[in-house]
Length: 137
Image (cartoon, rainbow, N blue to C red; front, side, top):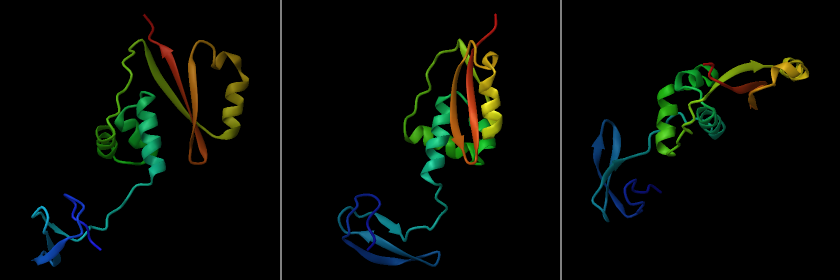
């Protein structure tokens, strides 16, 4: 059963055909709507991962290159979920994409993790290492 996108009511009638698609009119709020579009839905995993990377300090285009999702979609998700990035400008993120062996080698060297915060996040079959380093004066 179709529901009204405006008021979620199931009380509607047919109201013509527009562009070869059935049009409906809601009896409760007088809103006109057509049948649902079947579109491409992005998996929630990628939405969460994109928002996580945004909070880590990556730009929209960097996230686009990593996940293969449009930077406009990421921007829309940030607006939709009202995500605010922390405003600490003394640090900037750097990131590397590593497989499991490379990640183990990276952390075996103590000089790689000295003086910086780091987060490791899964990215498909690889891992993303994000570090924050102070801006150099």
